[in-house]
Image (cartoon, rainbow, N blue to C red):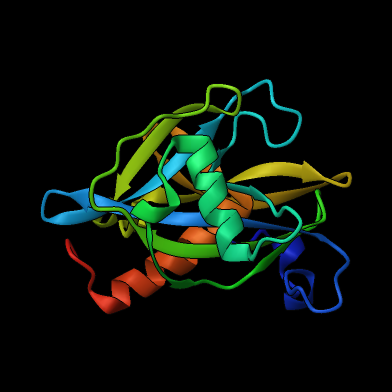
Length: 186
């Protein structure tokens, strides 16, 4: 799900990058006999990534581990307390060139979520079932212009939303792992 302009693996690796650390949670919640992934629609008026679909997460604060950052941000953005999330592991960190962030994704579960979105950052909370996410018809491309050049940018079309960029890349890695692990609902 990486666009062509990021095709060189060195553009996405964190090695020797001077970047701001951030962390996100790929949060799994029960959904009948399956699991769903939690995403947020960011407020459209935000300075960075306004209106985009993302995972709960954000910038690392001094003294925190990256996992603590992910859990704190999940609590701040959607109201899920860190003690309610069981962290299962980490996915591949990703460099985000436009903002110079190094994003560190963690996968976690919450068995009894009650969402309380922070209306200063989050427009709404979305949940997408794993069976839906592995559907190949959700993947598409559209033309976008970066640096004066036009590229085909891959994205997930989920409930009328375009999920692209770093979120789509992390989501694609997670879906590949979930599909091969036969998580509930698969």
